[in-house]
Every structure is written in structure tokens, then in C-alpha cells.
Amino acid sequence: MEVTITNENFESLKNGQLPLVVDFWATWCGPCRIVAPIISEMAEKYNGKVIVGKCDVEECEDLAEEFGIRNIPTVVFMKDGVIVDKLIGAVSKQKFEEKFDALLA
Image 1 (cartoon, rainbow, N blue to C red):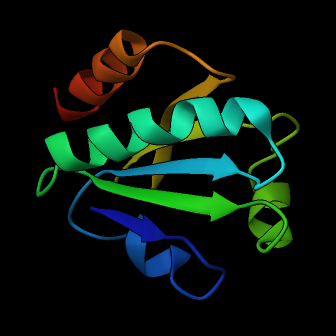
Image 2: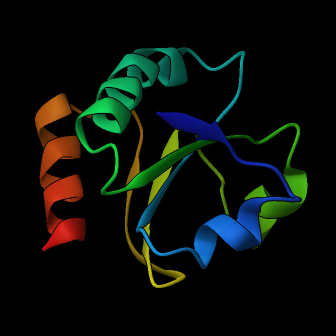
């Protein structure tokens, strides 16, 4: 299950019990639309092990700025409230699976 990341819920999700994966995206972004179904699939596959959230950079400009997001899609992998990895651009499902598995290792 994917959650919508907002300025209001981000801190509680970041500091939660499970690792957090944040997909920074925008509605007008072509590569974001390519990645979206992969992110949804990963959210289902890793449900209960990882929280997967989508953060619209236009609705959460403060968060995008805090993370230094310059290109989208950017997917940030967090564990214990700290960024441990990130992917930028439209990458393969296999690359996402590798990153999710590494997050849980």
C-alpha cells in the first residue's frame, strides 16, 4: 500500500518502525509516470516490511527542498530516519528490487 507523503505526516513516517521509501514526483513528469506502476508494485510486494510513500514536489515544496530534489523522479530510501540510498530517473524494476532488498538487509 502506498501512502501520500505530506508536510504534516512526513516526520511520523520517517521516524516510524519500518523503513521508508519516498517517491518524489509530479503529475506533469513523464519519467514519473513510467516509474509509478513499479513503485505501486513494490509497495504491494513489500507491504508490512517497508512504508512506500509518494510525495508530489509541487504540493510539498519544503520537503523537496529539504532533500535537495533537483530531478524527478527521485526515490529516497530511509532507515531509522536517515537516507541510506536513492535512485534518480526512470530505472528498471530489477534495480528497485535490489534497493528494496538492500534496505531490508
